[in-house]
Length: 544
Image (cartoon, rainbow, N blue to C red; front, side, top):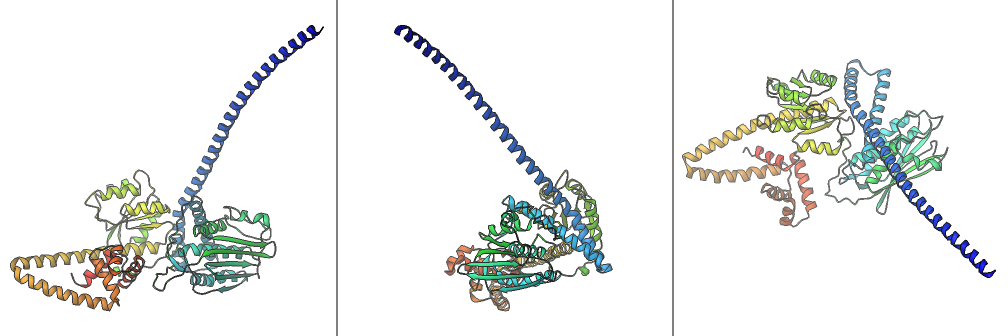
């Protein structure tokens, strides 16, 4: 009985062992299949993720291209509208049209800026030193006018002489967006208070309002792009980019933005930035008008063109027929205007038209674009001295640098102010004509001097010594007239010898920063922008 029981038990164990092996085999097969399915599912999810990212990129590119395409018609509308207002005067209907045009332009520029910021393409130069107090005070006067339209009382408390390192336009975007946001969401008769103070090594800029306020769950969302507060009582419009741009711009300054808000009671936005202790001889950059992101016209001092008997020739390359017609019509009274629809067409026309004194060209064109055109142009010795100005919707810093590297003398963004373009063209043509006259005079003097040297070498040497003495006397007189200090004279003499900033600093036993400050002041006194222009100014004043 025991043997039978043992035998049955052994058989049962053996059967269970076989069953266990079978189950283990099934489990292994299931694991293999599961791993295979997980791997396949992972690949599918990765593909889906890539498709979503690609779709998002294509969507972003699509809207960016639309925004760029809008720039040309916006430029036409803006300039034709201004021209009509000058002729007919400004009435209420035209005022509404102009306000809505400006809103559309601001929304488009905000969209393009947000795209750049989102991709990390920071387009500000934050190496400049600015007086933050002065900039805020200047902006407040304009903001008070906007607030008064809704009977909002805008007050301020601005501490004087607070400096930071930032591009002025970056601060302008921050204060404009914060203030506009407060005005937008504050009811008629409300209050807004703008405050700027310094504490230790920080500056605090706050905008406080008595507006609708922001709930706690919404406070994180409002800094995201395309997000807008919804309120049935508020008739507000826009694409929800303002606070996103503010946050990204503040981050580019290594600062932070804080928000305190309560529904119905209002909101306080506070921007915290690093304070800069400016020295007395450092250059302060507070020019808000020098920006390529607005339609602000930059005035350039030029000579009157009435004294030219023959009109200069200019070539305009533009594939948009309306824009080409507008530019041709505008400049036809001042210039002989020739046009091409793209780079290929323009290169063909250059062979048959009179030599242009300047070429204005778009970049994005079929067959041969603007970058390719300038390469073809400057590869030909006949055309390599013609100045080229790019007039384009491509507003990235990379494109601008590429255009200038290829030899363009200027790079103007669309939409643009037609007066700005006109003045720049006049300035460039005037400068080229004046330079040609000066070059001819220099060549003439050089030839006369060479003939005199050939006839009497000894006498020439004596004259050279006298000329050298006259040179030094005349140069000293020019320096005194320009209020050049003794230290600045030393810097100029070393610059003329071709020394670099570090070498000048070493010889004069001063810092490179101090040398750069001296050079900046020298350029300002001579009304030049670089060493080449300084040399030319000295040569011209000394009658070389």
